[in-house]
Image (cartoon, rainbow, N blue to C red; front, side):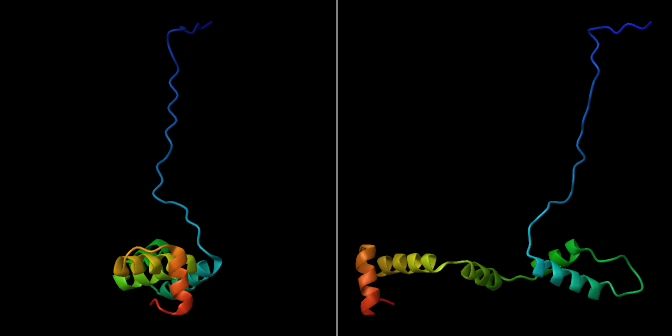
Length: 111
């Protein structure tokens, strides 16, 4: 019979494989658009298939600062726009309370 030496430890190395990808959530309509574009691009006789990563990476590289600003503006709520307008008014005309600012808005004296 074999005896195990209590001082000898069995080494368990559980290395997780490092993945090069990350899951993201996108809407179904975006997935449908990407799949449609990939089908269109992959209608070829030679070369490897274009992957979604290739398509997205190229698309992102084509975005300009104007596009990014447009996306940021589209993400603002009306409350955000009101707060920004209030802050701009305070910078230009001096500090006033929000209540006073609302009064100016209702009277139509603020831009």
